[in-house]
Length: 267
Image (cartoon, rainbow, N blue to C red):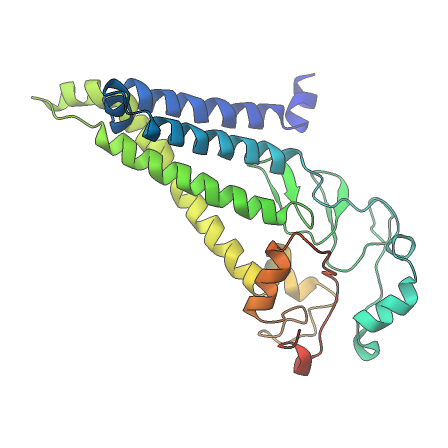
């Protein structure tokens, strides 16, 4: 029973949510800027901070519970007119054969990978994130970036609020006793802030060159990339086009489409 709960991510999500609200409550109970605004009747700052925290939690659950793009059928069966379309998507001289997954036995579309944790193949697989206990892939990658942005805003704001509540004392022992909970919250928020900054920076860079974490880390083992040069990326259309394709939700993007070298910077 307990093992099954952990597999579904219940413990991870419950721990994340509990930690978020414990830190938020700590910031409200101590003599921070939030508490001072509340005592003066100025509720705009506390309400805005709570809304940012709530939004970060909602985005966390949305990304955590969202289908990341699981492959449900063979790639050839999932695309109408697949042979003709693949011929236009990929130059014939460099067309790699689609591989069949050795675990779920489905034919994988290009850029898909089998996740050992989820036990499913994921389209445009980026990585499996233990923080959200879910894969990051074609369908939830952009929302993962949005979540990181909102989470970073909440963390940096919480750092500022926690620092505003640190008070002086006549002795170090008394100082640690008075500020103990705030110092603990400050430590946790600081560590998470560093992690989120690094994650966000890495993902924004990879998005700007239309590359996934898996492709970046394992390109020497991936059939459609291992014969490319170190600086060569057949999916890169230029920073502006890559970012537009990634964040635009009003149209469907064919992530498997490869571009010839002399056409990379064309739309």
